Amino acid sequence: MARTEDKLVGTAKDVMSHNLDTVEAGVDSAIDGTKEAVHEFRNEAQHVVDQTLNRVKGVWEQQRPRIEGYMDSHPWIVLAGLVFLGFLFSRAQHAKSRQTGF
Image 1: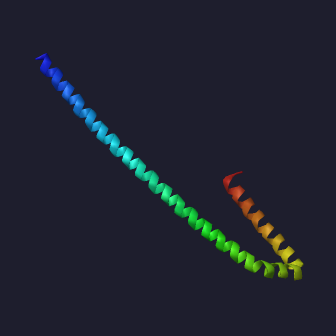
Image 2 (image 1 turned 90 degrees about the horizontal axis):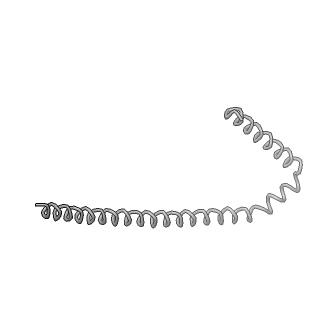
């Protein structure tokens, strides 16, 4: 009788070991698939960012002479605008720091 029980226990262990191996293989496969998807998504996102930055750079290079010409012909307006922007940003930062308590 003890031999039969030992065989049953051994068979149960083998079945359990096989099932755990199957589950482990499934989990490994899922992890590998997820890694591939994340890698592909990252590459696509990087490509979009590179395209966007190249477009912005191209537009900037086209508009730069016009902007520099305006700044050369109207320096006081540019200075006043920069001072005004500094004031707005400092107020926004001050309001933000009051809300957070820092």
